[in-house]
Amino acid sequence: MSRRVELTTSRRGVLGMALAGAAAAGLGTAPAQAALVRSSARIVIIGAGAAGTAFANRLVQRLDGAQITLVDARAEHLYQPGLSLVAAGLKPPGYVVSRTTDWLPRGVTLVAEQAAAIDPEAKTVTTSGGQRLEYDFLIVAPGLVLDHDAIEGFSLDLVGKDGLGALYAGPEYAARTWQAASQFTETGGVGIFSRPETEMKCAGAPLKHTFLIDDIASRNGAAGKYEAHYVCPQSVLFSVPIVSEKVRMLFGERGIATHYGHTLKGIEPGRKLARFETSAPGADGEAVKSTVEMPYDYLHVIPPQRAPQVIRESGLSWADKWTDQGWLQCDMQTLRHLRYPEIFALGDIAGIPKGKTAASVKWQVPVVEDHLVAAIQGREGTAIYGGYTSCPMITRVGRAMLVEFDYDNNLVPSFPGLIAPLEELWISWLMKEVALKATYNAMLRGKA
Ligand SMILES: Cc1cc2nc3c(=O)[nH]c(=O)nc-3n(C[C@H](O)[C@H](O)[C@H](O)COP(=O)(O)OP(=O)(O)OC[C@H]3O[C@@H](n4cnc5c(N)ncnc54)[C@H](O)[C@@H]3O)c2cc1C
Image 1 (cartoon, rainbow, N blue to C red):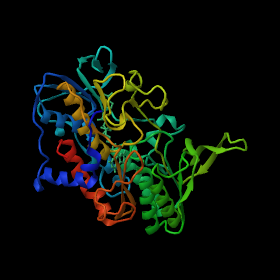
Image 2 (image 1 turned 180 degrees about the horizontal axis):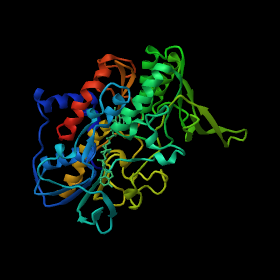
Image 3 (image 1 turned 120 degrees about the vertical axis):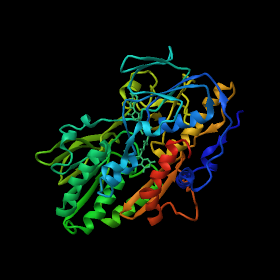
Image 4 (image 1 turned 45 degrees about the vertical axis):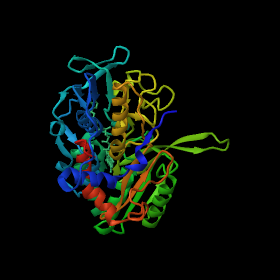
C-alpha cells in the first residue's frame, strides 16, 4: 500500500497562504526548497492563470534541464477574487489586472497562442497558430468558460445598462455591474441575484454579491424601498450543510427572499423581465417543470460554466458525469488523469467534487508537482489533495466569514480558536480585502 503525505491537514489554509505571502514579501521565512531533480522531460502546461502560473514557478524550482512550455494567448492575468470587490464599488477594475508575463519565471517558454487540439495518444498539443507541441507530461489548466449565450436575450453589451450586472465576465464588466447595482442601491425596487445550475468557480461569489449589494442598499437611498431575491436552481444555498444553514439564517435576518429550484433561462431587457425554469416535485415524485417570470430593477447574471471547447473535444473529459460541462476526468486525490497517467488536471478544469477556487489551487499544485517529479524519478508519488476549498464569504462591507472545507464537508479552519469559520468577523474581511491578494501573488510565484 502506498504511503501518501496528507498536505491538506498539515500545511493547510488561507491564513497559511497569507503567512507564505508575507514570507514572499520578505516578512518571514520562505518554504524550504526540495532538492533539484535533473530531467530532460518535455512538460506542456495549458493555461497561464492561477494554476498554470503557480505550477510553472514551482517546476522551475524543482527540475533542472526540463523543457517547460506554457501555452496561453491571454496577455492579461486576472486576479479574479477581486472581481466581487470591483462589482461593489470597493476597488477599481485595475485592481485585478496584471500582465501574464510579469509572473513567468526564467526557464519557461511562453507560447502566446491558445491550445486548439490535444491528441493524448500521440502526446501532442496543437496551438491556434498551428504549432505542434510534443509532451512527456501535460498539465491541463485552462480554467473554464462562461456560457453567457445560454441565457436567451442576454448579451454582455447590456451589462451596466437597464439594471443588468454580470461580474464574472471580467474587470470591465464587474465595473459596469457596479454602475447598475449602485443605481439600484440608490433608487431601490426589486433586485434579483442568480446562480447557474452547473458547477461554478467560487460558489460563494453569488452570495457575496447579494450580501454586499443588500448591505449597501440598506444604508443608501434605497433603504426601506427595495426587495432582494436570491434565486438558484439548487435546493440549498451552499454545498456544505452547516454553511448553507448559516447563510439561510443571515438571509432571513436581512429579509433576503430565497427561491430554490429556479434556473435563469432568459431575459427580456426591454421589459426588465427574467425568465426562470422551475422544478418542483409533483404528486408522483417526478420533477414538474414550469416557467415563471420575475420583474426586476436589478438582475445579476452568472451564466452556466463549462470546460473550454478544446477539452470537451479532447476525449479527456468524464464520459459518465458532468456530460454537459466536460470537466477533465481525473483521480480526486492525485488529479492524475484516469486513462493517461502523464496528464494531470489543475484548477477549475478538474473534474472533482469540490475545489474551484484559487485557494484550492494552492493545495493542488504541490500534489501534482509531487506526482510528476516522482514519475520522472521512476517512483510513485505520495501527496494527496483532500478537497480543500476556501471562500471568504463577505456578508457586509467590513465583515466576512472565512469558510474552509474539504471533500467530506468538514470545516477545516486554518486557525481554530482564532478565527471562527461561521462568524461574521472583521479579520475575515481583512483576509479577503487585503491578505488574499498578497497571498495569491505569492502562490503565483511558487512561494506559497
Ligand atoms: C467573481 C469571482 C470571485 C472569486 N473569489 C474567489 C475567492 O474569494 N477565493 C478564491 O480562492 N477563489 C476565488 N475565485 C476563483 C478563482 O479565481 C479561480 O478558481 C482560479 O482563478 C482558478 O485558476 P485556474 O488557473 O484554474 O483558472 P484561471 O485563473 O481562470 O486561468 C485559466 C487560464 O487558462 C487560459 N486558457 C483558457 N483556454 C485556453 C486554451 N485553449 N489554451 C491556452 N490557455 C487557455 C486563460 O486565458 C487563463 O489565463 C473567484 C472567481 C471569480 C470569477
